[in-house]
Image (cartoon, rainbow, N blue to C red; front, side, top):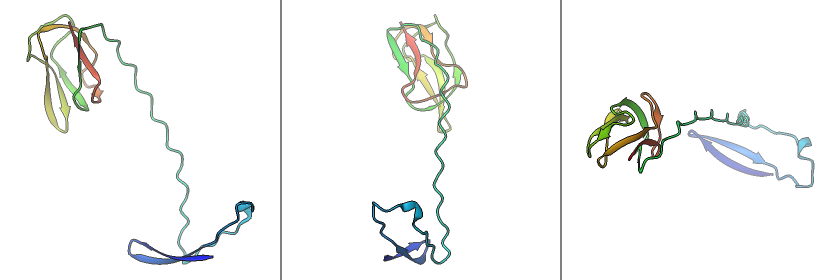
Length: 131
């Protein structure tokens, strides 16, 4: 047996640890509690995240415009087939309580809109494609 002093939230506990031979049956080993310290239960397996909804397939466009940061799409100002000039606002992306304008990097025609109003996007997600 080895004795250790462990401090938890400012309270010192003296614990004894018994080394068990690897060939011995560990299921039959007695469990010893000292000083009324509760045993810590094993955490349950984390639930699997829900699958993300399938994204709309985007029409082929020469220029892909992606989300620069994670956030929510609060307003889409263009639609497919609309001609845009460099600097025109395509949509408003809310991130960290601020509205960010996503603008056209060059002149073109909107080939596809891969998002919908109210959608949550991650950094790098496709927003628009331009021809």
